[in-house]
Length: 170
Image 1 (cartoon, helix red, strand yellow):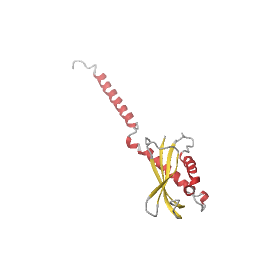
Image 2: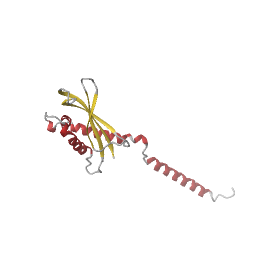
Image 3: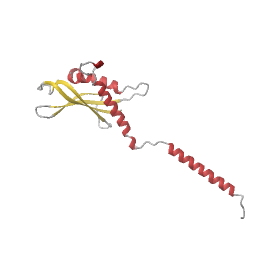
Image 4: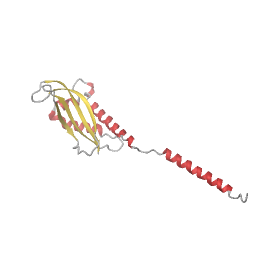
């Protein structure tokens, strides 16, 4: 050996490099990345929120035998749209101590005309118009109503209608 004074510095440099590489590996491994695969989670949360709101609207007050608010809204067209908007927005935009959600919606109900088996759709209400650029989630609920469907020629009776709400965040 000619000169062995640099061996200790070389070993110390290699050890420091290994410690820095191990630290960088642990930091990168502990960081969570938002990937496109996780995008469906917010869609599922919005769907559950809308489904829960429709379910709460379809429960009669105080467990009575009267019609639920959602049934009353569909049965009474003159009073329905504004009442649906107020109730649905109260249920979906409740934030407690957190930030405001700013959830928008467009709601309608669909029924089948018994005479010729065609489907008819009736708009209930919306918080604002859907422009096409929003990422909307569809929530549906079957509701039994006592109504003439279609209103002008139908026979009064219990009918199943499909309430459909498109939800999106602003």
